[in-house]
Figure (spheres, rainbow, N blue to C red):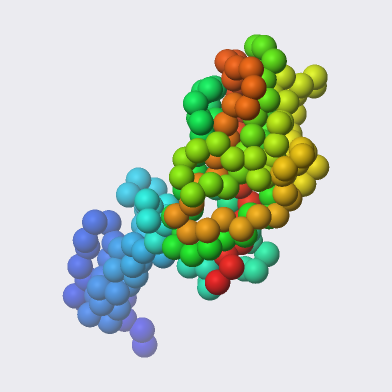
Length: 188
């Protein structure tokens, strides 16, 4: 006959443990905080942000081959070299850029073209998109496959430690609003 008595229960932070289950039954003990962590508010399991060194979260070997990594950000209205975008490859290995997308949602207030490319430092480069019009009608998405310009390439190696930059080539960037996405794969 089954007993209705539960012995040696311990309640800790709203979780119940016993000698039968032990402390490994706690969510916090089962999450390593590197690949899986427990959300402090909801108490649900979650994948942590990659962090500054991109070392946390799900490792590349554990991700489906169909998942493609990317870096995203906002376009900046800056006329300085590498002022529109400047993203350093901190992945720890050489990458292959498969596509750079620029989603321009608000055009420049005056005539403006921009160059996007890979460079050893945060300087102007046009190896992905050369002379992209930032005052188009209509505004919209552009990419390194269809909008390369004269010097641009659709696919390009992005060496470890180097930058993908976007720079004003002519005119002024005042008024631009939008985002960018760099789609890449690890070459190692």
